[in-house]
Image (tube, rainbow, N blue to C red; front, side):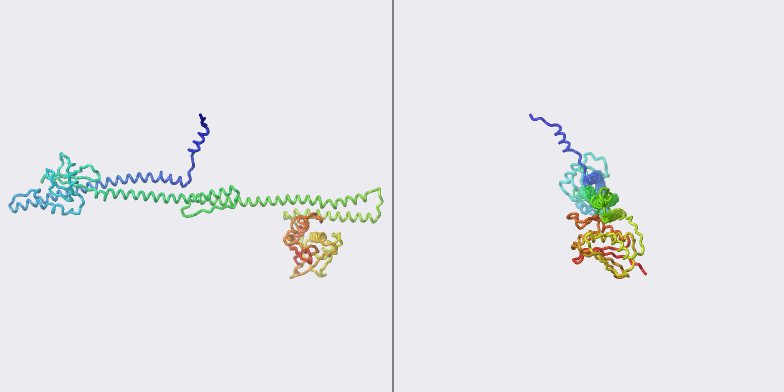
Length: 511
């Protein structure tokens, strides 16, 4: 026999009958059903019954009035016939012998749909209105056996909505029976009941339609909130909620959507700022990595040269002639100056990055600046540096020390990347009263997409191959920052004649 796993069975039962949270539309429909439809149905039932009782009472009252009216007509006709007989000196004719009673008795109510019977003590018809045998037999069979009340309309019969009224008279001794037919009942009670039920159903439908539409409208807007929350959860901080707004949109939903959009906007701003900070951090990490790499490679060479020549001059076991001593000291001086310039460049970079770069702008002569810069440059490949500037080249506004650093870096860059034994041109121009300096060197034409990146940090023309030239990769980056700090402008060009041209625009000295 197979063993029953009660734990699994219990779990299956729980999963089958577990509580499920309803959606807004479902809850709204249930609320409408409980709070509106059921009370409306009960109210309609009560109203229908009250209306039925009222109409039934009116039918009874009308039937009684008709019975009294017929009784009055009988009294009038009887008195009239007796008066005529007395005038003519003849014997009074009994009412039951009057053949013409129907013509005169029911003349005032001939349009009435009720059935009226006048019977004698033997339950035989004396007169009738709207006669129907089946109805007459039923009305007579239900008459009380012992009539106690006279000249008073009395209700009898088994069908409540089709009241029967009888009125027993003394003189003449007749009974007036008034029956309310089913057709009249249908035209009053049943028709009224049908109208009430129809109005209730129409009201219920209208309530459900409007309530359901409103609930669905709210549901759509709340779904927009759900989608927005899910989007933010998945990292889409740009998501904004767009509601289907109207005059009936609840304030709370509009408020939630507005606050959510503001929250998403703030989160997106924070995310963008965080992403920017991460990129800056990565840039700083890259800068630190490149700086360490630069220091380890570029500073090692001059330090090694200084250390080697210094050790050579300090040796006591060899005799060093004057020419060798002077040559060694020149190398030490050159490498020291080179090391100093590299350190100055490295110290300038943080000031540029943190906008702490300070300049003292004054009037300077570019001739003097270029000559001082040339003293700091040594062309390893004996490149000829040609200066093409007029003697009356105008003064410019610049920081003297920073401008020397600019031209030193530009000329070092030109020397490093020039074709061996080629010219390096320093050209001075004045265009529209604006002084321009072009520093040109001959090299292979530089692609335009790489030309604009030369002013970025640690960008070198030989990055994709090997370190075929020495340098920190900071020269042009520092040049651009210094020129712009002195209210100048620098651009780079490349063509087949001159491989590279750096053009600087200066602020002229106004006369």
